[in-house]
Image (cartoon, rainbow, N blue to C red):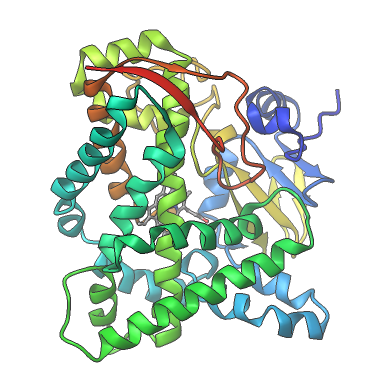
Length: 405
Ligand code: HEM
């Protein structure tokens, strides 16, 4: 059977795992006419590709190079920011940017957020609990990471509503499965707004006393006498904002859906809160919010039996890899006590997610407190609508009913 993975189809977005399973077995490195690139679905191939120096993380330059000159000028705002994102550049530029970012994302800096995250979670639940129902994304999963990131970046919490609009504009470009022409203009608009917003903050920070937050850390970061330029600082702030909130929101959303579809596991976690650490790892493996990442071949490479030509795009399907029976026993089962869980939900190698410790902390605190304070949680509807996004996997809305304890 010649299976075609078509992420534009709602039933595939709702449950891509059956087709991932078939592709892994019958056609693990296949050309996708829909995506115009190669789809890799086996764990070993995806992990190897994430570590392959012959593959580039820069998919912005080839895209820009393919545009007619006038269009390129029209989208120059997009190019200015995205070509400076650590996630889209290769060494040596990546090594320098990442080294400087690491100085602001120290384990101590993240651990210091524990109390603040707990307070935000409690406040959100206090607000929701008496109602007996919530739309989980808007009422809880989104505001939590957005508020945490606003605090990390040292920007006012009232601005998080604006962040959401700008990020949505950008998300359609970064991972949108639909080739709508407006998505480039929308991304450009969102980025221009973020550029203006963060440029003012960066300028103000560079001229004032250092503050103990991530922007402060980035402004102060220096390695071998080199610092981040203003454009790099702005791009990095935008990247942190973008990479850090929708992913974490979808960890909470996808995780809750998985738990509600496995009531025995949910009951087990409620009875044994000490499972939080392994449970969050399993939710990340079972239905990761970062469903895929893209690379471009710098030279001819071979994956599986396939020769992939220089310039071709590769879609590394993280969520397919995380269900590979060659690595995970009984991979389609949600097992909150799974040991040796070597999932790649946060990527692997040089671009490994810098926010992984923060996302884990937010996930653990959020679920621990939700499960301690809410009982009889139920989905109000089973037919959830999933985003048509290849990279950011999540349901658009999750209506829930529950009893407050
Ligand atoms: C559950 C939540 C999250 C998931 C599943 C996730 C997933 C990922 C993945 C798969 C990558 C690698 C991309 C690639 O190789 O092309 C990545 C990179 C990155 N993530 Fe996350 N992420 C999450 C949360 C966060 C948070 C909370 C932040 C920051 C506050 C963040 C910031 C970043 C940054 C800056 C990079 C680029 C690192 C580099 O290129 O060196 N992420 N993330």
